[in-house]
Image (tube, rainbow, N blue to C red; front, side, top):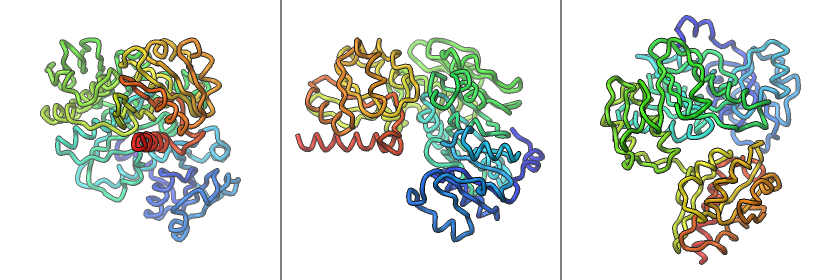
Length: 466
């Protein structure tokens, strides 16, 4: 972990520019104003797109909407960026030309939290990966709460770290970090860092897969003696991730024993992350089904053991965690047809894992949205086996269809309304209508949550009208 002396040296100067005024930017602006920092806020969207402008303006914040020009940075000592802001954006390039530090909102909030904590020390858990990071993050937090630890669930999972800065008592911060956030951290280090897996994603933003993978591996930077680096031993990229020499490497595997880690053996989860190997829980008692959730559970087990959580709290959490919305969420079962919301399936690998457990020819699959340059041909074998029909929506439909045309019957329906209506027409008992789009949502929705909520609402309305 970063020492007090280095944190003192990193104390933030008094004038900040914040690029991006969504949840993270708004929370950071409020936290900085609370601490007497002069704030300028810029965003490419018009002012009418946002709420919460007037209260911050009344406190002295200056706003630059509609694409901030050079004057946005004129009085700034440093630039903070929200997760959605690429490092290639013009204001970031301009800040670097002016030799201004460019920091992620998460990095800034972490520095403040570490400077202001009183009566003990915070513990930091950082979770990243292409898939499974939200579920793993929330699962760890659930276990720690059952162990009666003070927990803050923060980061890319929905609540910015900056929103937790009014409280200075020590806590366990369990944080989901995206590659975008990791791109702009400098001093942050985690007591426990987790890399769930690394598969192609966000190739619309990164020059190559190797560049994207390197961003993910930054989660381990700065770790030292006593810290734990948890890696997926079954993943070809994550298993080779470079970790710091002083950190303890804790692998996890669903294929068999791994030294000093967590694994599956004889139908049970086993852990040696806290010392001698012990059986923790039968696989059949896990709260969430599926191979991907078994991996998430092993990562959470390794983290909780590394943090010294009570064994009974770990067992209770692994067996009792309720899961997260929009991740293989059963919306409704009616007339023998199951409707499942996996709107968080925003890349090809996530959709592959979602399809794995279904019987042959039993899925009506809804695919599409905004393409992130995924390899849709990788879906072909699972689609050919499990999908009876594929319904495509959104901008990516023309890209999705050619590599899957030989694997299943495909219909382009354009919108979610039409997808749900068409699925209701053709579904038969034993089918599952699965929304697992393998794409981002931003062509038709603000985020994957809004997309999933729309799907769920349409499903319930369709069932009510049947």
